[in-house]
Amino acid sequence: MPASGEDGTITEFTEEIKGYREYDLWRRRLRHDIRHELGTIIMLASAVAVSDDVGPVSRTRIQQLLGETRWLDHLLQQLEDDDEAPAPSPERVPVHELTSGIVSGMRLSTGRQVGYEAEPAWAHMSELALWRALRNVIDNACKAAEGRVDVRVTAHDGRVMIQVDDDGPGFNPGPAGLGLGIVHDLVSSYGGTLEIWHGDLGGACVRILLPGASS
Image (cartoon, rainbow, N blue to C red):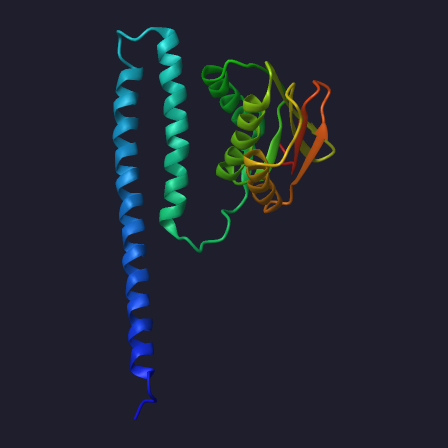
């Protein structure tokens, strides 16, 4: 015969498990619905991008919007696959091309001057993880900058370095610090490091160092 109160404890535990399963199902359905809507946006934007009545400037902006939307879709896909899945396997990523795309998008969305210099550089990392890391760093720099952000990609001695300088007040804790914590976790998962310095422009200098891959 169960001890006093045991039936109540079992019932509470059962209800808790049921509630978790319902919440998990709700989250999965929500992610599915979001991806479905994103797919609709991607389809419509793709049709507009190739339309004859769209000018070159608008076409460039639409294509950049498409790129951002596709990355968001990749993020949702990763969540949908398995919440407990390990970090994606590293792949050979053209860092200069990926960074160039992010810089192009930031130039369209910010009033800051965003400079970019790069040499061909390939790294071993998840492309999605690198996109998240770079997007965080460059977005933070643009928000902190007074008027200028410089982004540079170099490769030397088997390592790839992405350096982002801004002319803002320098690094301080807060939302930007949280973003850099995410960047650190993403980069360190693939053998990379994150460095924060006082930059030549007077603000923060953030460096991401990654294991290089042959071109």
